[in-house]
Picture 1 (spheres, each protein chain N blue to C red):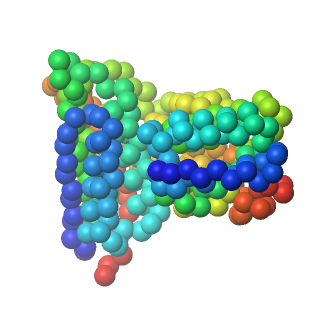
Picture 2 (spheres, chains in turn green, brown):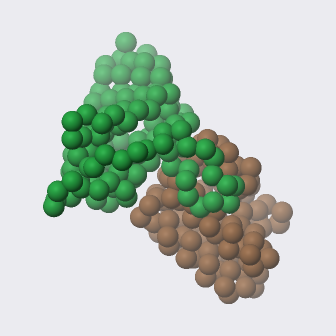
Length: 141
Length: 110
């Protein structure tokens, strides 16, 4: 079974955090180079979408910016992400319908749900926890 | 992210986004398409061969550009999507609306 690899980062929910996510993925894929391309692409696409959603829409409960911490993990049979923010609680429809064909928005969470095998968002205390999981068997090296 | 716009002739333009077409860079793509359409180049081909990554904002900019082009009597076509871009188009079923062409030339001639 290949080794597990995990990358963590945290920071304010601002556009620069998406750059950190990009760098975190580069680090993860360097370490877990045996993850098949198709799985890598689906997982990264979904996680970028969730973090973008937080950066765009999360509302802080206090005066400071929303704080986000994220962990990405490539295990032997799954790719997992956990993203935790301290924003206000909002209703998020994790199973949105397809928008009209020529709508310019409304496809973000739809894309996430179809890209990964599991997607959940849980309110735990004063935090929102997003979890994404994609089953992918890595090649033995 | 960098954009290059090539004016093919008075009626067509090719836009080449290089890098990551995401929330930060998508508005510029939409503006470039609108500028091309506004100058009479209502056939716009977006060459995605060097677009390493696209999110739903990037997809939204392509759809917005398609709408602008169609409103002006033209079209927006995409060419040479990378594997990640193709994945986004397929998962959202938007490959039915933005049908990818294998080359810029095919997209211009279709």
